[in-house]
Every structure is written in C-alpha cells, then in structure tokens.
Length: 244
Image 1 (cartoon, rainbow, N blue to C red):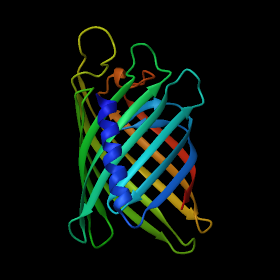
Image 2: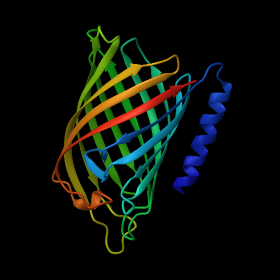
Image 3: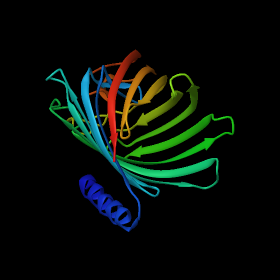
C-alpha cells in the first residue's frame, strides 16, 4: 500500500513539474561518519548521495546511504513535497517520505511511510523558526520537532555559516512492525545542533562541510536498525553538490 501511495505522489509531482516553466536539478555525493535520524543512530560511517528536482513550490528527492560496515542496513528514501510562501516571512509545506531499508536483520523494519506538515517563520534579523509534525503509518508514530536557524555571514570567505539547534519528541505504537509478536510501543525525546559551511567553488559546484550533535533521552534500542540506544552522538559530514 505504501509503495502505491509513493507511486501516486510521484505521478502528481511529475505532472506538476512538467506544468512549470522553470525547474532546477541538484545532485550531491558525500560522506558522513554516522547516519542519525531524529536522534536515532541508523548506521555508522557511510557514503551518501541524492538527486532532487524542484520547480515552483514542488520538490522531489531520492536519497540513499550505503554504510561501510557490510552488516549495517543501507537506506533509500523517496521524498515528495510542496511549499508555499504565505507572507514574506512565513512559509508552510506538506511532504511525504517512503523509507526502504536493505540488508537489515529479520526483525528489523524493512520499510515505512510518513507524511507531515511544516511551518517556517523567518524574522527580520535572519533567525528562522521551524515547527514540523509527521505521522508514520507503519510505525504508528507521531513526531514533533522545533528548530532555530541562523545564517552567519563570513565576509572574508564570501560564504555563510548555517547554524541550527533542534529538539523533538517521537511516540510510536509499533516500533518494529516486521517483528513477530505483539506490537512494541515507545516514546523518546531528542535534541541537537548542526553547523554547515557551504562554499561555492564554481558556477555549478558547492562543497558542504558539516558538524553535527544529537542526544536522545529514553530511547528504546528497537528504534535503531543496529540496536543503538540513548546517548550523545557527534559526527561530521563532507559532500559535493552540483546544480543544473
């Protein structure tokens, strides 16, 4: 059912993009020393790549992560969404994401599907406030996340340092839907911070260096495909992005 929903969303997005006069394509490839999602560690260091198509308020993206440790699960995500600017400072959007996990254990989750809404308020001082809610149909999970962001100008480098801090709560009724036995429910909180330094090196190429931190509180190990529990995690990332 979830793949059928994703296919329908892809058709809708494709039709909308064809109807637009202008579109942009971006692709990137890089490395991350951990794969962490909403505070949960999903794998160790991995190669990651993505391709995205955007036009007007529409955006579609395919993202993948391939861990260096062969026993850890690889991951592919298909994300589709639409965002609109209601005012000069406020934008709202909807999105849907299909997750696939390969090379996972027999009890681990093989796939899930979530949809959500997001609102972003950008103050005149350049500080942005984001509030997002998502519901995962397979995990029967709700997540709420708030974040603050700021772009710090680095005049001498001709670049901006992108800073953000975030926190959220996740509550699920069926953390491992593919495992035998009765459903297992759990809820946990998380918080963290990120810093990105994008640096343009050509007309169509950007190098992106990132430093990340996240901490989870009360997280059941079943949320993680590799059995990682609560705790603090830091990691770095490096990628090269191309736009056309």
